[in-house]
Length: 465
Ligand code: 4AD
Ligand code: MG
Image 1 (cartoon, rainbow, N blue to C red):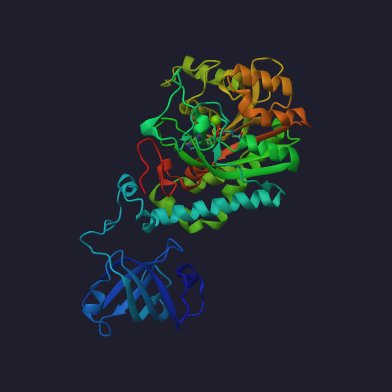
Image 2 (cartoon, rainbow, N blue to C red):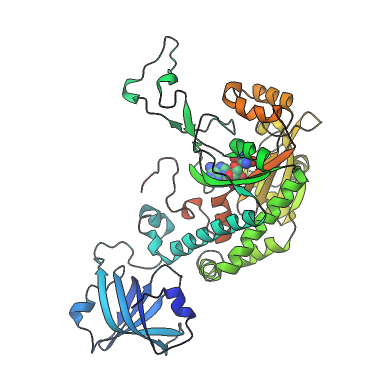
């Protein structure tokens, strides 16, 4: 007999039919004559109820069927008399694949803290919460590929090992096969990387953008979607050392086109979640975030507010003047902290905000320089509860300006000569942005900590599993 996934069991309209399900036991309870097993197979957040008539099953067989055990159940699908479910399965045959010793299986009671579950990240997908999060994460990946595919974007695989620091922020993890126990240095104390694996210093990428631009200036519209790495020592609920980023890059897009695309893109993803993850979102809403679907719908229904960094800072300074207390100071030229971004979004405009035209000193070398000589054509999309969810810009397409800015910002030309070449040969106006996948997931799931929306989080001092 073929196994039916529990998700499909609930879709089945015909009852009094034979059925075979397989999954992990969430709970078993009951009395002397009948037992009820709640079974979950990961296909849905909902458990199927298995009714076990003790006349037909021995204590011996049922003994190993405790929370966490894996079983197969053949039986009859019937309309349920009980509350809380429409159908249930009357067991006729039960096979135990694997028991889970109640003394040592860590997921006994409901309501383990998220902190505790992080310590058992190898087992947490067995919980309703992480089952839901894994499924929403999958759905968001599908939404992203669908969005760009439908628009005719080409998915480009940019390299993970690289010799250039895209953001120029010095947050790279080094990749080396040099013997760290016996490092040879020259008379200046420098390491001779010509002896390293790649013949030069190499690192894990912080962004696929530079290579993405090469592709955009040939294929038109492209996107990358892959892991990126940042060795920044920020222990916050919004930073990971390894995260996934979606980076579209478009030839002939100016900054306004870039903003339009970003807004359309995020709304598409949120709509997809509401349409395809209703059960999981309802579960997450009930347990973690009562306003979740309301907030998602709100984003769909409202235009993102667009204003310049300068205007944003004026609003923040006015707030300070009126007595609002921020932890960090704010004035023109400072990088905005999450608290500032969230003030603009949550308290001032009460909707997502796109800030543009930041001071060039706090942004990367590749951004298009404005005529004022002070600002660059950057754009950050700021979201409620999250702060920055997207960072992007129009790119500097002028060879001389780009080369000079790289030099000013100490980005070595020898590392990016190939990138500069695009501006020497057939340069074009173009733009792009990066969406942090886990930041999107924080928003869509309503979870508060980024460690809970990626299966195996990597953060300073944590790389287990
Ligand atoms: O603003 P960032 O640093 O921009 C770039 O990397 C550009 N190269 C993107 C581009 O224009 N193609 O990062 C982009 C986004 C941020 O807005 C944030 O959502 C996410 O990536 N992000 C992080 N997410 C989790 N943990 C971290 N440490 C992150 N750093 C950035
Ligand atoms: Mg940024």
